[in-house]
Image (cartoon, rainbow, N blue to C red; front, side, top):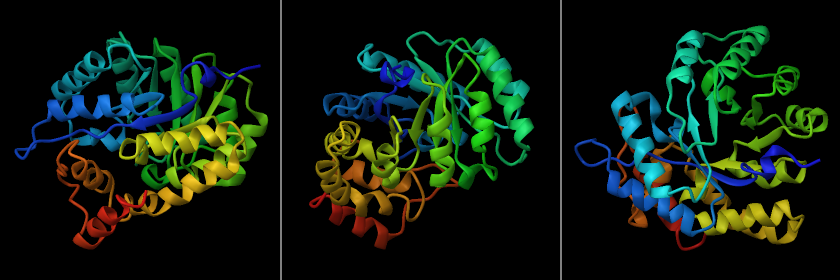
Length: 295
């Protein structure tokens, strides 16, 4: 039985950055250029307003304008996933009930951060979101940012909900990932949230990746993912190692500062982030720029 992921979320998704002007306003011209760059180079779907989009420092009015800009530029060419996450469950329920989902395919929702709920709390949180949402929910497990892990048992319990489409796994715990893959329902997508682990995770059964790296090297990264999904491991491995230095360096001194270095070098957007984020240090920047000729 095919996974739901094979219909909309199989392959390479990209967690888009939010480009800024020098005055820190949103650069909508650069955003249009970024979206077209992804579509023209084979990306399978786009993720709007995730962590990489610096969503904690983007206002509600800016979020609405960003969504509208991406929908208009995309023009229904690729599926769009919207990031809606937080640590106030009932506030998120209200947001989901009132969000305009026209032109969108799914919601990516990070596990509640800072509060550090137990597993029963995480399960109840997502069940309420899934009940409230008009679109399917993708869980997002990233313990390095949230301070808590969604266990394999909790993920599999949530996979039973008819409005939970899959999970983006960025735990780095391969045993946990394998438990989820082994026991998941046939229509539940398991998606890598770690660029450097993507080849390995597809080899053990994941459906693809939601990538930061892919937006700087969309053609090469997508080719690597497609080779891996087709079982062409040798071809995928070569591309993986071509990209490995850059995949590590974009996170070496904070994200999305790293990926914006590569995007600026390709005249996609400026290397500007909003505080409390800061540009990567000069050493990392120079190492990143060296990868442009190699990756």
